[in-house]
Length: 560
Image 1 (cartoon, rainbow, N blue to C red):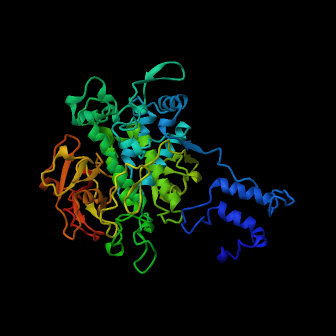
Image 2 (cartoon, helix red, strand yellow):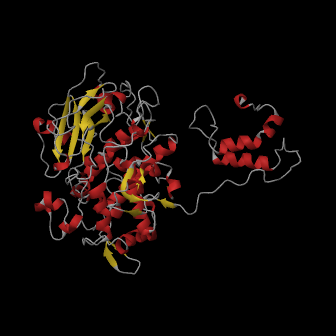
Image 3 (spheres, rainbow, N blue to C red):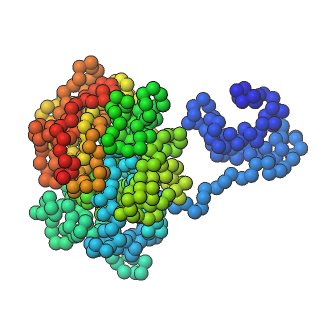
């Protein structure tokens, strides 16, 4: 503590500075060690406060001089809405949430006047992707819903350690979204609104792409892949293991210290990408040679993967918000974003980017027609600690999947040890360049040194399997400029496969991609995949260059 002019060997020095010491420790401005992440536990802080308030007694024989020199710590704001793990809700809490969707949002109604249809259509018409605003637009979207129903929405913790264990009850979708019925507070037994929600315009995406698999009233309601509701599905175990790949991708993203400024500092290279006022036209690439290596760029990839994994309505941006699992899924997307925000309080964001159509600092209203962009909620208003926005997250109920900067999974002894994989400038990576919006939805499953890979090889059990890059289609013509035309680079780590195959370079291994169109299960051949924007994977031991491949010929976005 010499740097603070405090001598811990001198009682008088410590007592003189006692209150200041406490304030710095309590405000998390003074770490316990040189590790900035290690702070004094609350119990130790309370012991220190009690000692100071007792008059800083030197020993047990000292005369006490009690006074409230330091008041009790401020307790959490009781007015905050607290988002809980949906599996931890009491029966009464879950019933209240379902009833709010029924009574206030009219989830089961496909009428254009239904609040549910109107809310979900905001996503169809306005959602932002492949740009810095993606997480914050969806934050405003959920806050607007919470304001309408008057309660916190629960999160689905798909980062739980056992969420990728097929034998765990947490694998697949939470039971709350699978129940057929629930008992409403008025005593009536009703269809579960978390399962039987009216699809977009009353017609599920499934009934357009797989009409032979729709029966009865199924078309009216949102649909998910059958593997979630059929315990006898032969692919169920393998499919339920897939989220481990997605969890690894999220954990990788959380290790990055930059949000969207991979250069990490102001300097001669120009203004960081995170501070440009607009996304179209993009700033010159030569100013930002590694903008793809950041939290934001890596995080959106597993976000897309989960959407495609759930399937049908969730796999298409025009349909996805009509499925109630979108709410709890994106609450957890927001929770992981919040973890990054709290760990990086000095991060820079594009403060004035409008998040249309939301209005106000807390996104409590919408305006889809105003040309006055200053009216709209801004990215900067959403890019802050969520407690300033009126809500918080309850702790998880089971340990979460984590990863170290070296890539070794933590928390459980059975974690896959990835630390033996080469770590060259953050690599090895699979890079997709020129990624832009598409009309249809696809999965791109990547393998190393397996040219004969097919659908049966997809999953963590295959040592050659790198992971999945889902491309969630917009489903409609983009007439609001939501899709950037330039294209971005997206990365996925190849550490798992590199370690399993014992690869060490410098030669790049052979990369094979299995590209599948989600609407009909068609596997694209190499020429079909190459014609789409950002569908060709390339391997890099270290950080890829800014342009790893030329963009395909420019085509209208989203089928327009």
